[in-house]
Image (tube, rainbow, N blue to C red; front, side):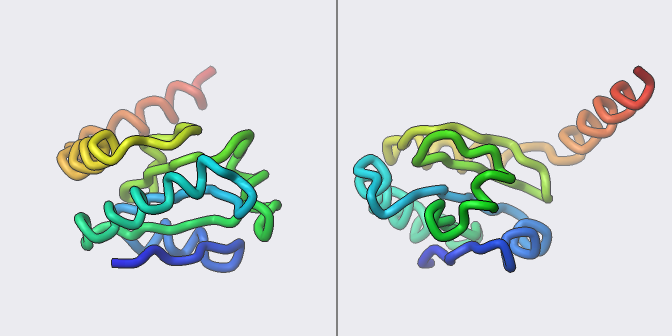
Amino acid sequence: MASVELTQDNFDTTITENDIVVVDFWADWCGPCKMFAPTFEAASDKFPEIVFGKVDTEAEQSLAGAAGIQSIPTLMVFREKILLFSQAGALPPAALDDLLAQVQGLDMVAVHAEVEKQRSEMEAE
C-alpha cells in the first residue's frame, strides 16, 4: 500500500478513523528524509493493514508545529488515537518492521487503562 499525503485538513480524520497510523514528517530538501523514504514505502507494502502517511513539513508548517516537530525525519505511530511512538531520525528497515510488529501486538485495553489512569492522576493534582 502506498503512503497517503497528510495535511491539516485530513490529519485528525486519518488518525481517528484508522486503527494504526504511521506518520513520516519530512521535507524535500532533507537528505536523511530522502534516504528513509524507500524504507517507509517498503514497510507500507509489508503492513497493508496499517495506514502510512507523510507530512511535508514545508507545505504543512502549522501541522508540523502543532505536532512539535523539531527535526526531520520524525516518525510517529498512533494506535486507536493514542500516540505510542515519536522519534526523530530514520529507522533502518528491520527496526521499523520490529516497531510495527510490537505496535500490532500491544494489549490496547491495558494501554487505554494506563492512559486513563495518568489522565485521572493529572486531574487530581
